Length: 496
Ligand SMILES: Cc1ncc(COP(=O)(O)O)c(C=O)c1O
Image 1 (cartoon, rainbow, N blue to C red):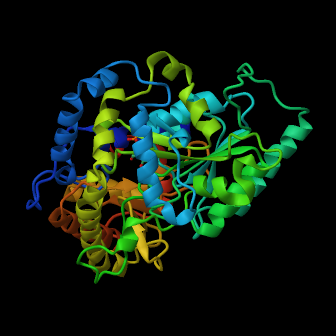
Image 2 (cartoon, rainbow, N blue to C red; image 1 turned 180 degrees about the vertical axis):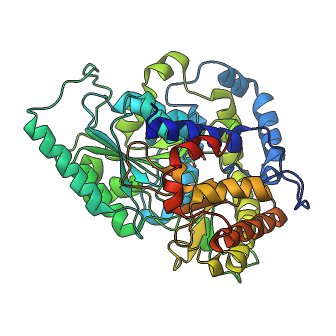
Image 3 (tube, helix red, strand yellow; image 1 turned 120 degrees about the vertical axis):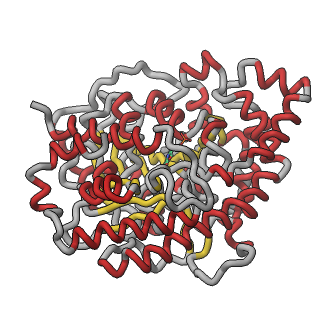
């Protein structure tokens, strides 16, 4: 007999694979019919990829003998030094309101992207026997689950639900307290598989989140909750891993702003967890702290350049960045993505990436968001769909998260949208943390506005509205109660 979890996993990988990895052709700008409208795929819009800029940066790098030699040899463990410096300066410019101290290259380790680096950090900083739990702010980026499983945490992933300020801190505290009590009951610290390594440490807890323009929920964590979270992390020997991959894509929610985007949008609107951890009460240098810090920013060029470049960075304390760089795979293979990081260096140092973000990506994604928003206002909100955090002045990222009108099942809606009107949406259930039946999301869907062109976004939302309307009128049994008995079978069948 299959367990619900194993079925859920099969279902999840099925739908995720079919909607994110299958060879669905790229969208055409003026085609509202054609292939299925894919509002699930969280990829950058092909028309917004900076192909010309990459070509120029690559040419420049490849025609400089010293650079190309560095690029083609093993990279230094923390990454190509000019790239670390360029990233540090670029981050300082963007996060500059959050403190006068510039971000130094010594705080940066170049990575192969946020996913690769998450795996790498779990290898360095966790131990499946000693590290109690991976706390995951939920709904969560579903492809992270397997990375935690691979690191030995399949049975220790704990969902922490979001609230209107981004994370329910009371639930987190309660869970941490229970875990401490259990530890006390079971005696002293648990053994570790890993030997004592001076270059690294093992944290007792890890919390994974996307604090800004979250995937999938589009929520942004408030400053108060960020600060409190850092305090909690310090109290419980917890590492906060923040996938800060959407921060640069922000725009005002004021729909009248059609012209050039305000200069304010060129600076981050909130400090990251890593900024707070650096500045709060003496940072990682405060008395009795071990210097590794309690937060890191797991950054990526995937959403602002292209995932194919496979370059990202992680920022943390100097000790933390050094520890990441000393992972066995890096010590053996050198910095990941060494050659492409020489291209990225030119792209950053020339200012071309900043210009591309300011003049192409922000206006491009803002325009798509506005089209989607106005279509939702016309076709979905009147049916009872709802958005979270509606009072925000700044929105960003790739996604919107909608709660469904009473009793509709997202899984049924997603299946029917796909089968009846050729629209692919992500049902909330795939963002549930495996093994956490109390934190469920079948009453939600995620829509991505990045991949498809504007005309298809509008058409896609209109079609979702048609299906939802039929379901609400009770044309067929579609309410969650009736669906509940059959949940296992439909999970397998829904998205083959
Ligand atoms: C929150 C989050 N983290 C990580 C990734 C993947 O990042 P990368 O391509 O750098 O591995 C994504 C991509 O969708 C994401 O949304």
